[in-house]
View 1 (cartoon, rainbow, N blue to C red):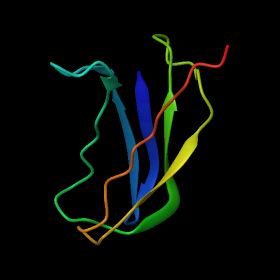
View 2 (view 1 turned 180 degrees about the horizontal axis):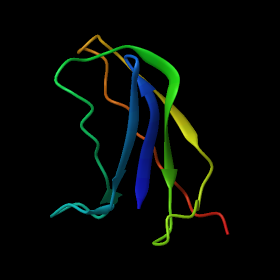
View 3 (view 1 turned 180 degrees about the vertical axis):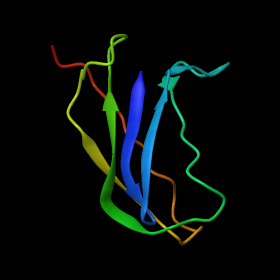
View 4 (view 1 turned 45 degrees about the horizontal axis):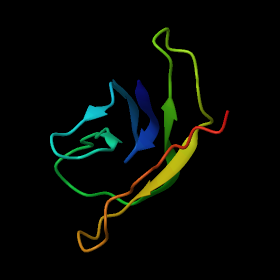
Amino acid sequence: MVRLAGKLDGKTIELTTVSGRQPGIWQVRFEFVLGETPVDSRDTLYVQLLDQAGLPLSDQIYIDTFSDCEKKPGVVRFKKNR
């Protein structure tokens, strides 16, 4: 599972999804929709891998969001190192 949590535009965010494979793509992917309007944020949201019991498998990785639609969306890649 993947958790997205923190604050965005003054609102508390706590979302969890299951990662999965997209047809025709070999990589496992996940996606969160944060709203209809792009918002700037810096170090207020994080993603984290969880096991099936909801226990952390990774550190909290902080991400930034942008109000400028010309900027690319964030991509976080987790690599197994054990």
